[in-house]
Length: 205
Image (cartoon, rainbow, N blue to C red; front, side):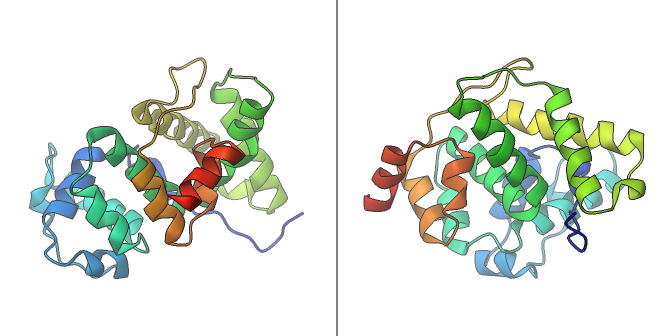
C-alpha cells in the first residue's frame, strides 16, 4: 500500500477546456507568470453561460498552466489545432498524475500488447485501485468516481485518441514533443505512445 501519496482529483471541472485554455494564454501579457501561477487574467475573457462558470474555469486553467514551461506556452500560441490539444493534455497530465499514470500504466500497456479496446471500466478500475493503494478510497464517493471517469475519457476523445470504444495513436508535431521533452518531461513521450525509435527521433531532432 502506498500510504502517504495523495492524488489530486480536481480535474472534473472540465475536460481539456480548450476555449478557456486558449483565452487565458492569449490574454496573459507575460507567459512566464502563467508558469509561476501568478498571471492576473480576468475571468471575463472566458466564454461561459454564467459568471460562476467563468470563475471556476479560470481557476482550473490557472492550476493546469502553473508549472507548464514558458517555452511550451509560447509554442501553443503559434501551433496548429491538434498540437494545441496535445499541449492542453500535457498540462492536464503534468497537473494530475492520475491521468499521466493511467496513460502509461493502462493505455500504453494495452497499446504495446495490441489491445486497443478501452472503456469506462478500465479507468474506473484503475482509479479505484490507486485509491485503495493510497488508503484514500473512503474519501471519494461513487458519484465522484463516475464523474472523474467520464471527464477523463472525454479528454481522450477531445484529444482525438479515443472514440468511445477503442483508442488509437495520434500523430504529434515533432517540435511540440521536442520542446516538452527538453523541458524535463520525457515521460510525456510514453503518454503519447511513442516507440523507442520515435523517442530517439525526438531526442535527436
